[in-house]
Image (cartoon, rainbow, N blue to C red):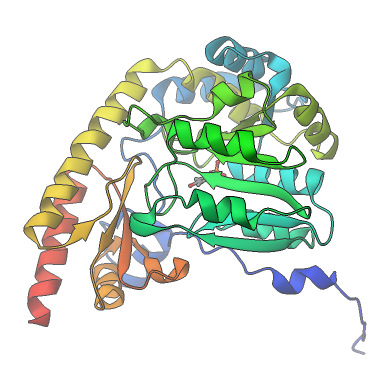
Length: 370
Ligand SMILES: *Cc1c(COP(=O)(O)O)cnc(C)c1O
């Protein structure tokens, strides 16, 4: 006999839309039966994981019957030494994504307002809706620059959290230091500022800031970092937040005791000191970005100057067809439609060969249209 039941999920879950991840390589492989798939869709490190992290993981395997360090002390100490903060100013999370959820659970009540500068990373909205908070979208201005007047204009007594992503995903634009400083000074002090600096190490502008200087100065700022991008550890899930200790202590209350697994803790601590892998990654990214800029220019396509490891390129009304044809030919990129940018593709910087293959296919697809 069928059992009928009527259990109701929380009202606010109706507002949650599932995250759209980049299509995994294995999935496209299975669909197309192609052996060689190129994935330039999730801003992963094209050189692979930090070799030092791999050694650390291998060295930790025999201890997997033990629970991980609930206080992640080794990693927090390494971060504190490297970033000139105290170990108590860090919270380690199961990827940067988890930090966004923890932050939302810590600070957001039903009806609170969360300001998001759109288009941006979708997880801020997820966290807000999860807690029944209201999302207030402030669109980026001309050339996808942050619109400070509009941000300040959106603030009111219900505002609880301001999400700033710099360099911003998916545009690659950033918030200059002087402007952030001004913003932090004029904001009412009941607002927590999330400074998502997931791509900070790729930024080259001299007036870029990852926000840590404002944490050191004591502003109510939490800087998000991840080991998924620069360090090539997206698969093992580790990131962190850096903030004034009072903020960290509140967030620590909502986190599960063993949120970061033992292999992730070991890998992250080792990757921090893998200067060679970081150097090679940044070199490859700078070279690859120039290769893409030049290739797009030759194709008559304009793109947004990126402080990150991806490029947002304006393909025009044909962008969706180009995206789909690339997919059919085994190249995965991101279609801008998910951010309401239907003329754009977001393309992660790959290896020299991957970038060349991508440019060649885009050229061939564009020729076919004419
Ligand atoms: C990738 C990314 C993160 C964090 O990713 P995790 O893999 O969860 O660490 C956070 N913010 C932005 C903008 C990102 O692109």
